[in-house]
Length: 88
Image 1: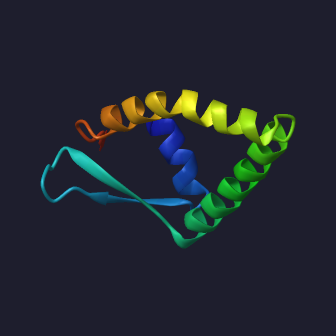
Image 2: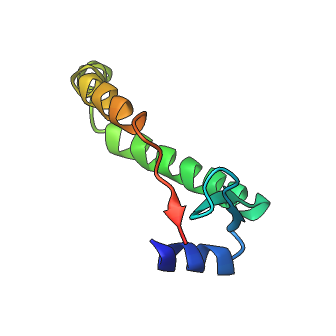
């Protein structure tokens, strides 16, 4: 994890701050450049998703969304658990 964060920091996409609540931890924030890249990546991902789903009919797309909904709910519950933090 640290090497990935180092690369992102060198690229100017994130910045690290000491965690005031835990001296062992570091808070990672996106920079303005990181936010711009995130927007571009999300837009590209959504376009890719549209292209993939275009081979399905609207009914099939709705059926797929309905089948995937319980998995998404479960994933969201897991992500609401303890926060991950990068430690120095």
